[in-house]
Length: 261
Figure: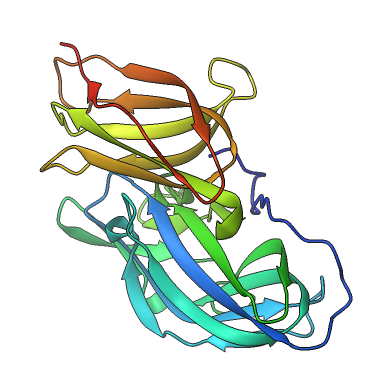
């Protein structure tokens, strides 16, 4: 995914900044793009939202206080981080408060420290424009790109550093691409906008199921995509499926993708 360095690029619908009478519900889900680790474990203590753009006015919507292995949240799987009834209006920020002491990666069977700068103080912040309407459930999906978020510091012996790359979307404004890869070949599937151009943007990534080759690419804004299938086993060629239309609220089913050797 292409996002502004050091922060999070977010595409969400939102208009009014003034609250209306009544309340609505916000649900926060987390999904992940795969990475080449055994585990990526993030301890999320709580989730907060803010109607302002500054550092005042944070409101706790959940306190999961648990460790999530991001690599279990692929291929359509997700975790609900919390939900809360909120006053109507536009919420401009969300943040995840992280316990660094309980966060780590596992690589080749070895547990390695994961440094989360300011994770426990200011949290992992995302700028959003989530408009809560009366009696409506707003589902905010956080697509956590573990592969691009875990980086190696310049100094040896420091473990890994978390520089989060997260895309947040209003689930109601997104669709899904689903398909099957044969042979499975430990393939990865990518949904790409403007493929083949300098502006190409990989919006969603997943590994296909290693048993049946099924895959699901979530959180895709309505548009036309190229689905690129990259086998991770030798002897097979990359295959692209072009002009795949995604419609908000629907699942686009592809014909089986047959890999050539």
